[in-house]
Structures are given as structure tokens and as C-alpha cells.
Length: 442
Image (cartoon, rainbow, N blue to C red):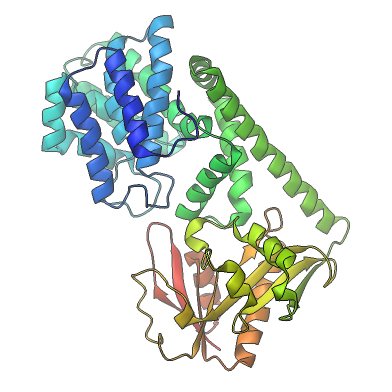
């Protein structure tokens, strides 16, 4: 059993072992797995893609689904043949080579399975009907309700009508519908059953970053996700959890409870502002404070809560705080000596290595300050502290006679500021994450 695993080689080894142990020893299964890795890597969806729906997620879902299905074939009406269908469907359920947003388009994934000549050849060798695989993939559509469900069901029925196995066979159709439900719930459980809370939080941050959610929504949407799974999908959720090893069940439930505890803390913090009139205070930090190790460590703890693509100068964090060219202000609770709960930091554009796609015309002119993404301690987003720090940073940059300020921000946030007639413009937009690079004139 593998836990806390995000290594594609080790995950592939575990998946191969499960398939071999259950009699699927033909080379075509190993070739399908290798082809999946090749496709995701070649389309920028490998280990380096900072989004929820990357190759690691695909392999984790396959691994957990197969582990659960092994037990189910001994206990229920599922059969060994179902492992082969789940193997292929789980590997390709999120494959969307034309990805414009991180959330996959399941119909595109299904159509790929039906159209790709190499995969069709491998499926033929393994005796797997691609139409049934396509139907299983469509069942992973989330959320499974309203128009999304109706549209997906229409295509599922179409795929069943094209299959010699399910055409005019209500019993088989019902069987594979249940198998699709099994896959859809295993998809939502998998990653959270394979590690501790820091891993679960990293997954949630990946999802939030790639879907362009404001950090304010991260925990509350995670809690809503789990409540929907445990309440509205309880039958299949409990069935899958019972089919997993004890440590996986424990990891999943521990992670659910940890998110719920965080949400409770958020509510308590919000209550302190609503009912107790708690105050946030911004402070320009003098250079003397910035030499203190405890001060630096308190900032770094908050810094590490940012999604990895927004962590600039991580390896040189202490040096950058101490650097007199760095502009830094903090957000404190109650007064300017209170606990630090956020900070804004930046410096000359030339000191930063940005994404390769960014071609800033002012680079080298030393007239632009780069504002790193605002960092706020979890639970305090949404209390306007971020806006106050950004405004103070802008004043500090203006005092240092910079002509421009650049940074990254959510596309919707930039658009709202443009609509308020601020002197701000897009320099480079990025999909699917919609965290864009902008410039303002000071």
C-alpha cells in the first residue's frame, strides 16, 4: 500500500502490480499506462503542471479505484473484467489536450478515447470496448446534477447504444452505470486518501489556483465539496471507503475533519471582526526589524501558505527581507505591535525571474517595481487587509520614484480595477489558471 505518494514511477509500478495480480498480464495494459504518461507529459500536464488535474491526480485515481475494485469483485456484483474498464477510464477521465481551464471537459476526454488510433489499437488488443470507456468517463462529470448531468446522460446513452455489449441490454447498461458511479466517487476520494493534511491542503491550493478562486473561498469550498460527497453520495462513498485499507480510510476522514476545523476557525475569526470590532493595521517595517530572525520566520510561515507558483524568491527569502532595496509592509492585528497576519513585499523588476512567457518592455530600465503576490494568513482573507497593504506598497513605490508597478493577480480582480478606471492594464494573460501579469502607472 502506498501513501503520501506523488511519484509517477512508483504509482505506475503499483498500478502494474494490481493489474498483474488480477490476471491482466498482457503487454497492452502496460503500453496503455506508458502512453497515458507520454500524452500528459507532452501536453504540459505532467508533474510540473501546477493544477489539480495533472498526471499525478490521474494515476492516484487509477490506483485507488483499482484497490477498491479488487475488494468489490469479491464482495459484490462487480467482476474482474470491470477492473480493465476502470483502469482505462480512470487513466483518461481528465485528459483534455486543448485545456483552456483546469476543470476538464469530460466529453473531449471521451471523444479522445474514441478517436485516437494508437489507443484504439491497444484497446482492441485488450478486448475493451471504447464506447463503454467513454460512457464511464462522462459519468465523472462534476457536479452530477441539473444541466451538466442531463447533457452527460444524453451522451452516455449514445455511447451505450453504439456498444455491442450494452445495446438493447438493460442489465448491462445498469451494470456499467453503477460502475461509472463507482469511478466518479473514487475520483473525488482518491487524492485525499493518500496522504496527510499538508498534502491535502496542497491539493486544495492547486485546485483553487488553477480554477482562479480567491483564497477567501478555498476552505469553505473544500468543506462544501466533502459535505456533498458524504451526504449526497453517501451510499457509494461509504461503499468505496469500506473497500480501501484502514490507513487510507483514516487519512481521508482525518483530512475531511481538518478542513472542517479550519472552516470553524475562519468563522471564529470573522466573528471577531463583526462582533468584537477587531482591527487590522498596516505598517511600513523599518530595516532594523527586518534583520530579526523571528520576524523573518513569522513572514515565511505565511509565505508558505501561498500556492507554489506565487512563491517568489523562496530560496532567498531571508536575504530579500533584509535587502534595503526591498519594499515591505505588514498587516498586524489590533495595533502596529500586534501579531503579523500578512505582508506585501517587492523590489526592482530586474531582481525577479518571472515566467518565460512574460516579456516586459521595461525590464532593464530600472523604472518598475514588482509586487509579489500579497500573503495573508489563512482565515483573514476577505477582511480588506490585502487591499490596504497593496495601497501602502504603491505609496512606498511612488516615494522611491518608480514609474510603474507590476504584479500577478486574478483576471477578474484586474478587470474590476480596470472598470473602476484605474491606470492598470494586462501585460500577459495566462490560461488555464487566469492569474495574469499586469502593469499600473504610478
